[in-house]
Image (cartoon, rainbow, N blue to C red; front, side):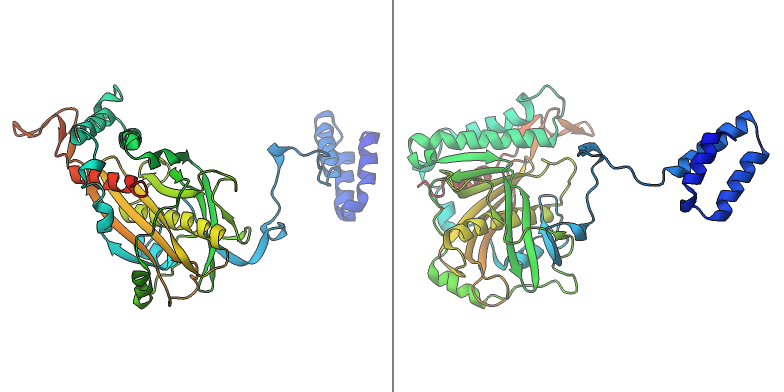
Length: 397
């Protein structure tokens, strides 16, 4: 046995039991040899390095987060988080309960009447809309069949650009701007639970002036008689992320306080924008409702602070599409008192599954030697764009 090996073993003697140390010494003394001695030497030295070596500097590649209960933001009370990838099991029904909202099918009549006025329509409107659809489905790419994520985004941009051509006759459109992927964070209490919305809005239209309220004071007062529908025995917090490390009283719209366009106007959602997250139609509409509510709640808390029933309700709109089918939504925040089921409720107008066209085929669909669907755009429905235009002109007329 080498002298340095024996010296190392003696130095490490307090770390091992006496029996183990004597066995190692006897083995090294008995089986003396080149190969055995070298292996035993490495074994003995490795036992000397029992203490964990720590770097004297911070290396992000080897960082290990401390346990959750040791973090500064750890709370004993759990918080339930809704983000842009949350798939609510009960869909819109669950979102209505979380936001204490009354659902009204179809859009408000006074809003739909905006696009019926010839002064608010675009010259050659139907032809230009069909060209926008063809550009998104056929002319924007050389692929035989473009992906949904690509043509839905192109179509949304084309329709927004088409609506923006009315700025010369409606100067208020120039008081708007758009932001993409801005982060949202807000907190509220529902019953005994604490909830937060965190995530990215997608494409957001903001403006200098707030949207006018859709319902009058009498209609808002009548919402106190509405009974929220429950889905017992399913828990309202199902499919929400449960966390114990969070900031309390979060209220951030994603913009600075001196931002010149502080009021959210319309949120635009694309159903296939995230390839790693596939939401069913009802869950997609629930996501639209939650983020529309989140933007309205952030603005209400900034303007009115702890005020419960708002003197002037906050209105925010939302449009969702997969490139062919559109979802239209108008949300009005009437109160920030969301803890109980009684009292004033919020309101949402929802017009779902509105088709813009039936088919857009690069090649005709032929079955049994008969052309079932011709090539090109088929089944264009102008009513869908009229609703899109009405939401866009809301607040500018």
